[in-house]
Image 1 (cartoon, helix red, strand yellow):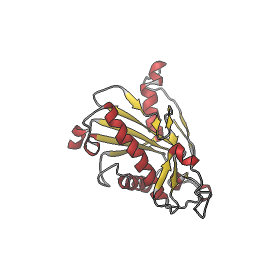
Image 2 (cartoon, rainbow, N blue to C red):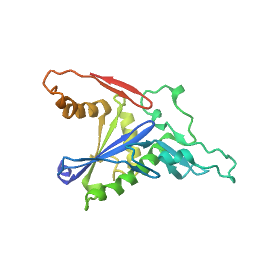
Image 3 (cartoon, rainbow, N blue to C red):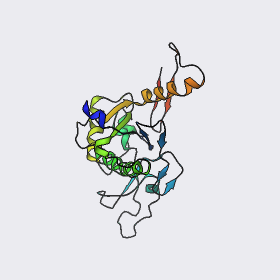
Image 4 (spheres, rainbow, N blue to C red):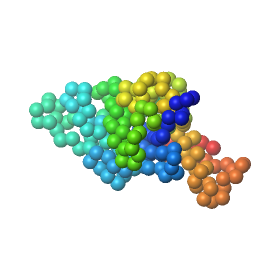
Length: 218
């Protein structure tokens, strides 16, 4: 666990079915920085989990909110290039009938999206703290739905590696937590304390209404 001593910044990356975002935390500060600057969009804590590819569906041309507004290419045979979205639904126990038809493999879409949002993360960290080596000094926390199997998390780990967020597939600098657990920790340290409810024996429910799933935990 010697790598823990190298960690200076913790990144909480919320990769959602329809919207995604991230927050930053420095170990020497109590201040959490939540990003609200995205390509072509400012002032929002999250951006769309959407990709727009080139005509061959090989390279990403735009992502986030911008991917929803690509103008048709007059030279393209398909003048209505539809954005690629909801690819996260290929993980977990989502029924086949609810999964969208994708023009690319869902793992490629996840990897490409993580790569794009990863670029923003890497550009944002130096705005607050200089001298941070992303691969050496950053711990990435990725909340996932409670239903995710070990295989689902292994796929997410593979995609994070392909996206350049970790330097090897088994890096301990990528850790998973469930989305209800992350919400419960926040509530315990914030809302419950504000109302003097952070006492042993207090029972509360987490209701996570996401873009593609709904989870409730006690």
